[in-house]
Length: 433
Ligand SMILES: Nc1ncnc2c1ncn2[C@@H]1O[C@H](COP(=O)(O)OP(=O)(O)OP(=O)(O)O)[C@@H](O)[C@H]1O
Ligand SMILES: [Mg+2]
Image (cartoon, rainbow, N blue to C red; front, side):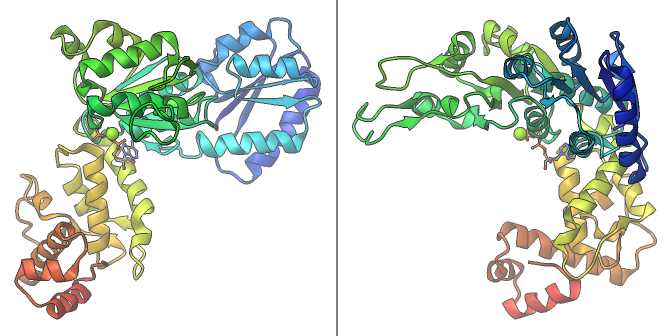
C-alpha cells in the first residue's frame, strides 16, 4: 500500500495517530506508506485506501465520490444508524471513535496484504503491463460499485480470476460467489437450477430446493460463458435483473433476491447482439462496466512476473527439489511463444517444467517439446544427444501420464513398456506421480 487518505476535521489528533501507525507498519516493510490528512476533496486516484470521518456534514456525498475509486473505511462516534447507512452507501468497514492505533494497524495490515502486498499485480491477478494496470483500476472501481460487469477475453486470460477479485473486494465479500455456467445448464433444467422448487411441485420433488439465485442472495452471481446462453435463459436472467425477483417452481409467491451480476464471455457480445443471438436489452443490462482482458501475446512484458508467480505457486509439487527460478535461455523460449491458450497455458507450461526440472533452475529442456520447436528456438544446438533423448523420453512419459490421469499401468501399456520399466524411468527422469 502506498498511500492512505484520511478525510476529517480532527487533523491534529489524527496526524499523530496515523504517524505512529505508519511508523509501525513501515518498520517491518520495505514499501513505505504515506498518509495525507485532508478536509477538502482530493483526487482519490492517488491513494489506495481512504478513512472517512462521518462526523463531517457532507459525509454521504464524499463517500459516494470516493467509493468508486478505492475502499473507504468509515469512522465516527458509536452510532449504529450511521454505521449501517455508511455500509449501505458502499463503505468497506466501520470503526468507532476514538480510533485506536492497534485497530488501525489491523485494518491497514489486512488491506495492505490484500491490495498491494503484491507489487506485481492486484491480489492474485498478476501483471505489470500498462493494460493490466488499467484492468486493476477497473477491478477496484467495479468492486466498490454495484453495477453489473461484463468481462471479456479469450479463453485462459483470467476472466474467472478477475470476477473473484471483484467479489472479494466488494462489500458483498462475506456472502456467496455463485458460478453459473450458462452453457452447461440445459433449458429443461434451467428453472429448477436457477429458481429452485417447492416440495411437491412435480413428481420426485420430495423436498424444497433453493435455486442458485436464491443461494447467491446478497452476494455475487457469475454468469460464465454468457455468450452461449439460450433464448429462454436470456429471458429468465433478464427478468431477475429487472425485477430482482424469482419464483420457485410450484411456488405461490415471488422471493426478492439482491444479487450483483458479473458475466463473462470469450465471444464478442456486441456482434452476437447485432446478429440477434443475444437480446439487446440483456447486453446493455450486463455491459455496464466492461473489463477486457487482452490475450497474453499482446502483453508479453507480463511473462517474467507471471512465470515467477507460477514457480512460487507450484514449486511445492516437487517434494525432492526446491525450484527457485528459471534460466535466461528458458525465459527466452517463453517470451518467444504465442500462447494460444493464454495464461492458463503458461501456467501449465510452468507446472510441467517444475515436474521435469533436474536443478533449482528451469532450463529449456524442461519445457514442453512444442515450445522448443518455436521458430526462435528450433533445435537448440547446445543440446547434447543424450540430453535431447532424455528430454524427448520425459516428454512422452509425461504426456502418457497426463492422458492416463496418473495411472502408471495404463501409461506403461500405452508406451508399450512394462509397468516396472516405467517406474524405473520415472525415477530416473524424476517425474512425480
Ligand atoms: N493475471 C493473472 N495472474 C495470475 N494468474 C492468472 C492470471 N490470469 C489467469 N491466471 C490463471 O490462469 C488460469 C486461467 O484463468 P481463468 O480460469 O480465470 O481464465 P478464463 O478467462 O476464465 O478462461 P476460460 O474462458 O477458458 O474459462 C487460472 O489458473 C488463473 O489463476
Ligand atoms: Mg472461465
